Length: 328
Ligand code: F6P
Image 1 (spheres, rainbow, N blue to C red):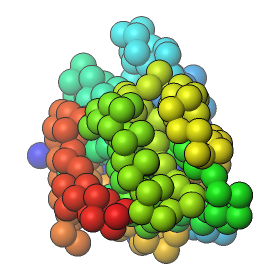
Image 2 (cartoon, rainbow, N blue to C red):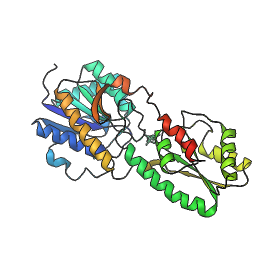
Image 3 (cartoon, rainbow, N blue to C red):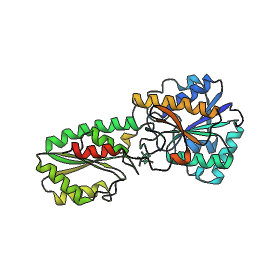
Image 4 (cartoon, protein in one colour):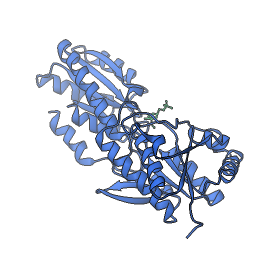
């Protein structure tokens, strides 16, 4: 077992996601419960390099469980990608007597944490926080559930216009490399088609399928497109192609963008964040390091960072099949 941990630092890094505040609250209060010190580190790895730390106690995190974003702020740090940056970060941690780190973020955050741990043998535990849900070792990342609810709400509203005007809407949702958001909101929002990076159906197949739904009596359609979808160069190219090949539809595009990352976290995200925050502290105290805490089948499990960032989290193939059946 490594040297005992008396002071933990917590930071949020990469894209913010709803539930990050609930995780910070849980980490800070779990430290208080164990009578150990806790410091909040501002702006992710940027603040770590600069030594932008602030002591936190149980009261510092009052009134934040229901807030989106992150009170510690977040950044995508360029400095931490360099050896000098990481060396400077290590110095700041030693100067402040911090013995362990909890990092909340996605694959970039965990990649940084893994390298840092390997270089300095500094104890680090990760909590998966990204709306993309692209982390292996947890069924849900913090913010995924809230983002799904936000997007479904938007699709419901857009559908009102689609059906009032007999229009076809392409709705672009986030998901740089993966289609977890698109697939789930597509089912929940009753989309006719879901286009995801994991499946390249081609433009002609898309038009053929939209034509079939038109012929079956549908007067409007919703197509959910993941940001990283590879069929067209962009969602606007899809629109142009369908415009040219399907004169029967008036086509519109709606890019939901960053509104998907904000807002108050759902109950599910708050509970998940609370459980994972507690578990991150417990695991650091137990001598674990270089791993992420995640939730699988309602149990907290540990996954090495190396495996968590592999990008091979499987899409639910039952859902893929379901889209085909239910959009008939
Ligand atoms: O990783 C989360 C995410 O929201 C992606 O879905 C999206 O591509 C990206 O972040 C956007 O990042 P930024 O806020 O830096 O534009």
